[in-house]
Image (cartoon, rainbow, N blue to C red):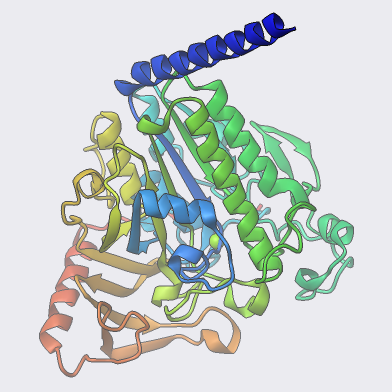
Length: 474
Ligand code: MG
């Protein structure tokens, strides 16, 4: 009996040594490999929605850990204040007006839209494929749902997801508009939004079961990481949530003090934890970069079902800070130098930064708006981004230069609060002192307004707008 016990102990010890050696061997092999990139992109999540960005009741321990072990950016911007243009900006590294993915007629793509992201655009996935990456898009696409515009025709080897917003394809008569989001009955709510779920170019489920969609997206990302642990990969995981209508799995429901919205975010955070675990298990910690951010600010008219921009003014759809400034977390032990970054960055910069980090050739046949942030990420050098342009559709409403932001036009998101107002003397805020944009200092600093005007004029002087791809319907 004793001999058997001793043999079992010895065998376990040998097995442990073998596993540790294998993991070490894998880690050593991985050391010189190219970096893997994972972008986790939330939908309509506000600047104030994560516990590491000050939310008092939403618990996001995994994102908090990423921020603690990596870099937390406090002046990080989405490329636009609504879904479609923001996603085009991230994936092309260009302002959406340059790709035709910005419009004054329809702000985003819809299920009856005729077009999508033009084939002539180079996506980050296509760029990384030139240096041998395997690529996956998981989740919301929103750059065209017809086959020629789907991720698999834009540089992604694999796609699993809903091709547009989760509130589209509404079935008439099931629920009155504006009430659907507060319906507790999941089966009616699910049936009401008849959105398709794609695997590559095939619809595999309709309506997509949105109660489990967040969990399934994270699981897809984990399985892709495990399958491709021996080659460089890029995963673009764009959650459909917390865009309304809110859905959550049974396991995650009723857990958060913040209510349903909190449950949704905590389920996204839980998935982040599973992805970080998978990276560790595969021995890829030292050569993987994970980024977390969101496409635009919170959808405020939905009250408790929408998120919070924290101290920032307004939300989704506007060019106030709450519409476009987002949490920006970069994690990559051994690569990303931990710290708080208060300089500016943009989702458009991911294209340029990851191009540099992967060794891909820089693109010189078109204007890129992304700036290479790699020296800030790796060495804490000051961010080379000094300005931000805030477009609404194809028009510049505001511009930021250094600490100062000028508003030429302001407009709320919707309805009576959405009235457009042009400012003969632009409004001017010092965002370092006044992130909430409360105190207009235009009369005190006219010379700064002039500098910002020059920046805008220089940008416009070489701007070539692509034809509007969002306006036409079938
Ligand atoms: Mg959005």
